[in-house]
Image 1 (cartoon, rainbow over the protein chains, first blue to last red):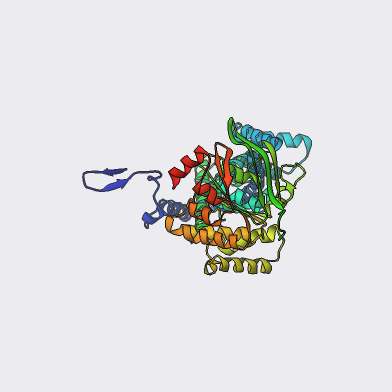
Image 2: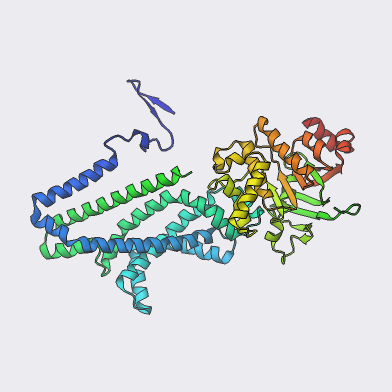
Length: 262
Length: 248
């Protein structure tokens, strides 16, 4: 559909038209404005008022490391869980299909914060696991369900003829899945998985309610001693923003590379 | 090759297949001998493709018996992959693997299923690409090929497994008219070499020229079968006559 306004400028309106395409990305893309703004603001605060701000910034790097450990641990575990769940959801085997489907339904119906508490205390009753591991497991169990749905959709987006061609060449279902379907599905699921990855990084701040000293908890520790709540959370927010912006850029570059290899 | 009493490559008895309440195949029986070329004709929805796809169990049948290359394919004890690796299949929509180069499309199953070495598979693949006339496209991805070229690659991919039987499911129906000839030429070459072939097609010229036998299907059943001369010049059934009058 074309909309023409009084100045004879035309706007193409269609699916996704509100999202700027790469071609019209000029010097001031949303990403650049956000990223440079965040870095600039951080630099300004630290230089202009080093008293609380520089001290806060020096206090939190340990927390950044913990946040990354939780995020990366959870992402790897949730990808594995997601792959199993996705395969289960398309499986003709009623048992696996049932387990995978119930898992997805249950997990999606419980808030992440509740799950984190629950898994932490439930695990604590049976075995003693370190807090960090408990946090990683809780995050992975939750995100595994979402990853499973992403992976299921990715597999189902591959035309049926691909599986048929592989089978007719004498491959088993497992071989066809491994050599033909999954390599193609990965390209499809990479963008949504990238989004899940960023969402997981942000949600990892919830584990600060356990005794895990991630970025947010380090901030809380500093704030409760110095009473500089506003200043601390300003820095914490900026650091999260910078990390997620870098991550989304990296994921974008990775997608481009994979698409270029076609 | 044995003369007289030839070995049966396909033996189908009273095959029945339902899609929900719809009866797609209604007690279909037919045989194909070693080296024979059979063309299956019929209006769309007549069950031709379903019959073809049930020969390598891409469709599972609800009743009856199908023996391919001496193996009862619906016996629960049968490892269906053992049957499929001897039966090549060419699809209407080519179904090449888009994430692999032409060469890799031809080598994948050789290595994974036939357990050939990469070198051996590669040589076999190049030989077959030469045969179908697209050797120079070996390192290209299928997306860059024309439809006719893709279908020739798909045929070569099946041949790389050294099949005893080739099934063609409307191999030229998705092609632009100017590309049909190049695919039919490859199929004719294959027929001359003595390959056993079952072809579902609307190409009457091909049926006339290549088929040893023509099978005409309608409403999930075989209505008439015979030599091309008989079929095209003096069909006996009304439905066959009607079909021919519409298509010729």
